[in-house]
Length: 167
Image 1 (tube, one colour):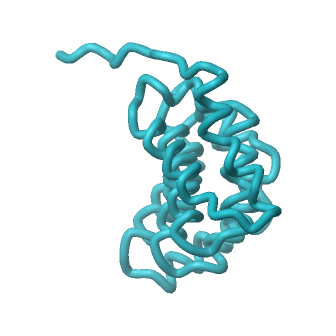
Image 2 (spheres, helix red, strand yellow):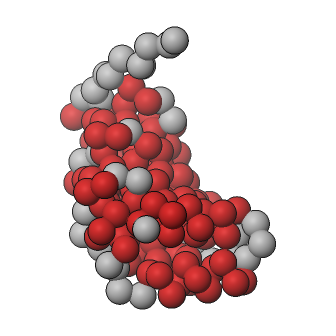
């Protein structure tokens, strides 16, 4: 039986370096490199706990709102990776505005971003502390039912997973 990966923390400077370019969104600067850097950190389980902070989550949420392309997909992938750490599920699930943002992505997108948004909701609904909150989110159950009716692929699987988690 394998042991859990050791937990390492990113320094404040590393988090600042990875998120600093995201602050340039207002200037029209391409932020894909910064989101990609956060994604790279998030793929390593030893960094996921230190990435679960308001600075990172706020920057990722802003990118999801403002980008409709690959930067949005990377930001969503980064959030789902951060939420894979059991210790992070509650904080990610309770991030103000995140559930509504994920629901907007599910409504707007029919591709990869939709599947990742559904996977994120399913992932955070695994935590018992989140299952009631997710289940009570206004409009979510009907949105999940719409996905189940419309989609035949992974989006349907993720929607069914969320319903299973909250029931």
